[in-house]
Image (cartoon, rainbow, N blue to C red; front, side, top):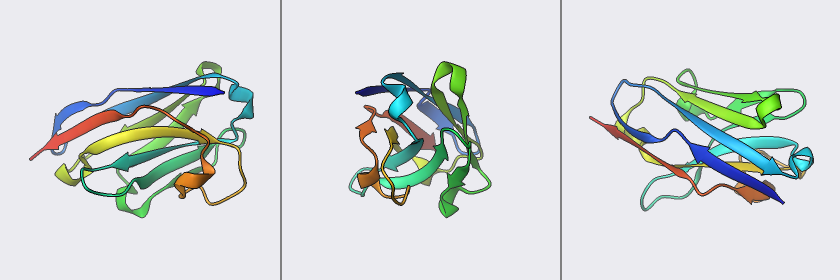
Length: 124
């Protein structure tokens, strides 16, 4: 089992920045990749970004490209999501996820483990 704990959410004005963290514990050696998703009220969970644990290859959704960056700290088993130039439409609960299956990293069903989520609210 892998446990994921997100932190760093909060309330920020439009144009501001936040950095989310996701600390992994447990059988972390079983993780091949980690990702961030978000879910706004009444909407489906949406892919944001992902990173492969060994190669460090990163992928970012087109909707946040140029504003969001995903990175990792192997020593801390932690993944970060740096969010800049935030917009009200970025308001959502942000979830961290980890997995090891072969598949498309934008799909929620390839991830085996999920955190509880952290709320991000961007005011206009």
